[in-house]
Structures are given as structure tokens and as C-alpha cells.
Image (cartoon, rainbow, N blue to C red; front, side, top):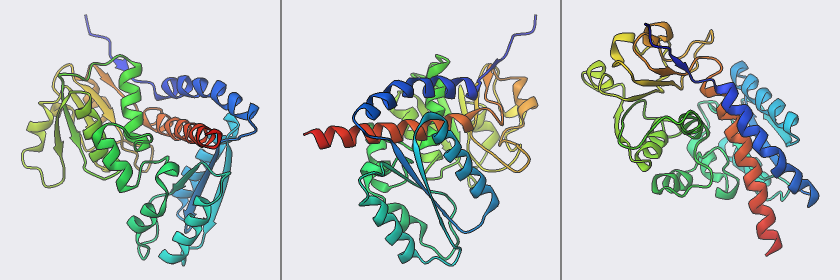
Length: 285
């Protein structure tokens, strides 16, 4: 009898997370506070514009106020930071998200660092990264937070497991690695310079693909019974994992789309609401 595969449905996880936010938003409204997320889009990249629109629509459905800041591709680093500082100083804005990537001439890291830690709901600052590494970040990077949320929702054990993360970006591969490590997994981080990559991936009880290459992870890289989390999203709704091939060996797997993506947005909304709650708590003191 063929073993039934567990499809890790991100829409289901996201719905549960959003349902939990309804009461929090209601309590804030009773105090005349509406959680507010400001999204900044620099340039006219169509994919980035789509992501920003999706986030705005998700805010609207929950009753979170969304401010969309659109800047031309000619914007300088100094002009972008000035806009971020203006949002930092606005007491009605609880979270700031700078859509990645920005035009090449802009110092993206400097722009990220301009976001105050209490409004860094996307977990992009070095302070936020450090707090996450030590296990006490209020707002870890949203995609890593989504990956952990999916594993926890489906009661997939992390402690004592060998997790293999393919990718080392500062907002995905690295933070999810420390989050898994903080939950007592043994973590191997792989990247473009890793030798014998397939052999290392085969060791993973949990495999997180975050490499940004379509269908990169092959089916014979996955050991029987492993859990596969595909954090990639490429043109044509294709993930970083060869889904059908990896499904053969995996015991559980996230689809693309409807896997990590919707939970990432839910994590962003959750962080924004929690930022508003922290603002309220400070104003009461």
C-alpha cells in the first residue's frame, strides 16, 4: 500500500493565523488604534508591484490600514532613507516594509538599517537578525517565520532532526537556519559553493529550499520520509523544488503556489498587529 503524502497547505495555515488576529485587531480598535503597515516600492518592477498589491489587499481584508509609498526608479539612497525616517516618526505607522529588490544604485542595506527596530516587521535589520539569532526577536524575517509556522501547525518535529537549508540570504536562508537551530535541530547550510550538494541534502530530515532557482532540488536528493519545504518562487509559479519528483520520497511537502507564500503574508500581518499592540502598551505606560 502506497504511503499517503502530507501536503503542507499554506492557505490553511495562513487562514488559522489570520483568524487569530481578528480579536487582537478588535481590541486595538476599542482603544482607537488601527494597525498600520507602510509598504515602500521603488521603481516599476512588475513582480514587486504585484507583491505589494497582494500585501495591501491582505491588510484590507483584515482591517489593517495600509499605506502604499511609490517612489520612482531614480530615487537616491538619501531620498529613500528620508522617506523611511518620515514613516519612522509617524505614530500612526506601526510597521514598515521596503519591497526587495530596490534599483541597483540604491544602497539597500543602508535603507533597511534606517527602519527602526520597533517597526521592522519584516525582520530585515541587522539588529533584528541578531535578536533572532539569540532567540528573542519580536519580528523575525517573515518567510523564515512562515516556515516555522507551517512545521508547527502540522506538528512536524524539529528537535533532534537534521535540517538542511539550501540558501544563505540574510532574510531567508540564514535566519531560518538559526530559528531551526534554536529549536534544537542540527542544521547544515548549503549554498552555491557547496561541494557534494546532493549528498548533503540526502542527509536532511527537513529540507528547506531557498536558493532562487526553479526546480533546482531533484527527487533523488531527498531521503525517504524527509519533510520538504519549498520557499522558492520563480516565474511561472515554479518553486525551487522539482515537486513531483521530490514528492516520491518526501513524507510531507509544501506546494508552490499555496505553500510558504500565503503564510509569509500572514506572518507580516501578525507582526504588524503585534507592533501596534506594543505601541499601545508603551503609550499606556
